[in-house]
Image 1 (spheres, rainbow, N blue to C red):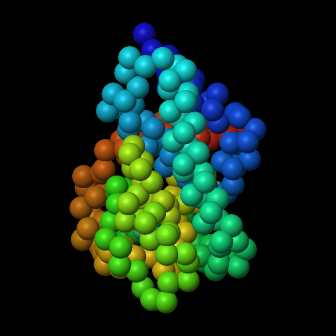
Image 2: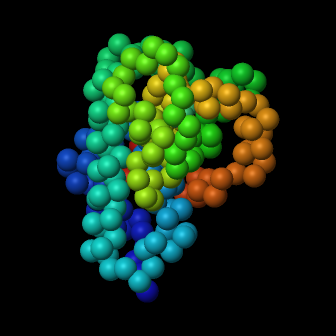
Length: 198
Ligand code: SF4
């Protein structure tokens, strides 16, 4: 029988070079773990050796980390504080948004952005093309301090399709959650434990 995915995952997350990134208060670790649990549910790791799984997890995480690092470097520090200064996980945005991040679960989207767009044009492809096969969440999705709550790193410049996403669409997802979200409690507990904050 294959070992629990968490045992391989923990080995990856304890790597010093990885750990210093995932400890960043905005790195979307819970969403990344949700992504991996969903892949596990789809059988991606069935009949694979721990070595293969470890290599897969490293590669998958490194793609996410390098995208996160590029965005973080560009936004740090002024734009990050403008995005985060009024953020509260207890505040329900527009009367319905509780920052669950479900609207940021997708594989690629329409690449219409507001102008002026202050970032490199190649960033638009992070959104339109996604981060590649097996990446289930938007490249711009960050997480608020390992809470499992989402924060959009380009909120003020988010694509028009995100801006148009409203209460009806949100309620639809809340009533029929996207598949990865069935793993949310498990993912959150694991993240708290692996980061030593529980
Ligand atoms: S651009 Fe922002 S709001 Fe739109 S899907 Fe990505 S993280 Fe979510």
